[in-house]
Length: 37
Image 1 (cartoon, helix red, strand yellow):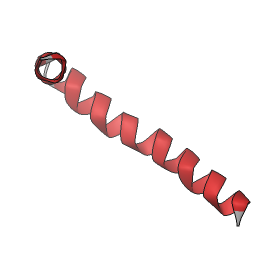
Image 2 (cartoon, rainbow, N blue to C red; image 1 turned 135 degrees about the vertical axis):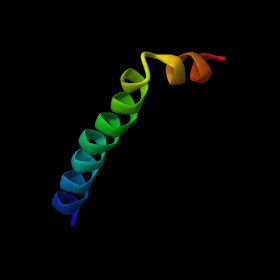
Image 3 (cartoon, rainbow, N blue to C red; image 1 turned 60 degrees about the horizontal axis):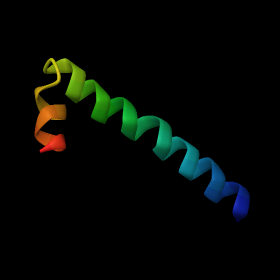
Image 4 (cartoon, rainbow, N blue to C red; image 1 turned 90 degrees about the horizontal axis):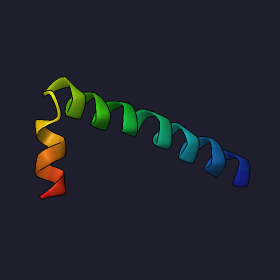
C-alpha cells in the first residue's frame, strides 16, 4: 500500500508541475504575475 502511495505521489508531483509551469511560461509569465498578486 505504501509503495503504491509513493508511486502515485511521485506521478502527481511530476505531471502537475509540467502542466502548471507549461501554462505559465507558455504565456510569457503573465499567469505567474497573476499568481504573485
